[in-house]
Length: 130
Length: 336
Image (cartoon, rainbow over all chains, first blue to last red; front, side, top):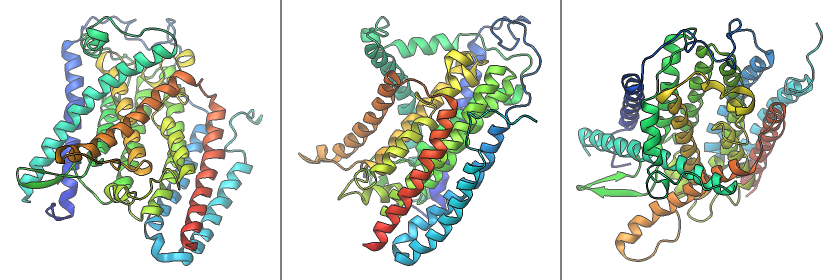
């Protein structure tokens, strides 16, 4: 740790890397624009649909399962994030830390099995008829 | 070390890392084509240069001179920045991956990584999940049905397996008691975590394949059903940028697997002084290369999952298994 000036300065190189990465991707985009051909036709610029004229708009309604997965992910990812600081200090908490986490894990698992029973995790059952 | 020298070192290390990465991606791609060809009893590219070694160069020139198409129905701004997001978020985690011990340059001691932050793993988890935006925005902004389906699949798959990925890393963090990647490697000087955390290792590996959209989890780009998935509408280098991001992500997850489970740069060190300085880096590269080979090998061997199987496997098997692994690990540690 003595080789670094101070704590926050350690994050500055990440900004440098971010700048370089942005520069690289911008450079590639620009280069491909400059070097590429530019012979446009209406049909060429149409969205790909196996060679047929595109029908309708693609930004349409989609299966609600994708949406549900996103919601459950946010809940469980936050719960995972809570596990990580606990894992770091775990050794100093000893058995107390273990039982505290057992309570927490029981709550997480209760929610997990609830959504499992509700069928949110099943993808192959047909949708209920409305 | 004064701050200006510190930042100068960081800049030089960043440039070197990006240079190495770009050429590495080119040659991993060539190696992949060669190895998959051998698995399928073909020869693979062997015409451009000796053993086809100049093939990546030829491919780059070809891609650069291809027409740069933007579909007329696309959302222009998002369509342009989606590949940029993918590449940027792939390059960012590299900045905290250590490849060896400290080195001494020009009278200064500097670690063999661009910067050393003490929440390394957390940072990597955070930034790699931002990579989902590249895929989702690419598919949505293209306004093509194939792209849209591909990005929906890709987004759901990546967030589902990210959960298992994060939970698999909790076990080794518990053993090491730190989020600092160098600290985790140093904690493995007696035993590599692949032995006490064998379950977490396999969960991590499986989730890593799904996170990088690699076969057998390559449903977002399933050629047979989706055209090409989220990058159907992309051409020239914009198309290649998604592959650049995918391969850099492969390198990143291989490096993390090496650091967290295979003891990083620990290995047999012997011989004269200069050899002892190089060997740790060599062991690190060898272990990471093993994972990269595994990626290619699996692609040449396993068929693709079905989507409901994929989601079921992630949520109903990997996540409970990872939680059980966390519980068992914590019980064993607290009883000791």
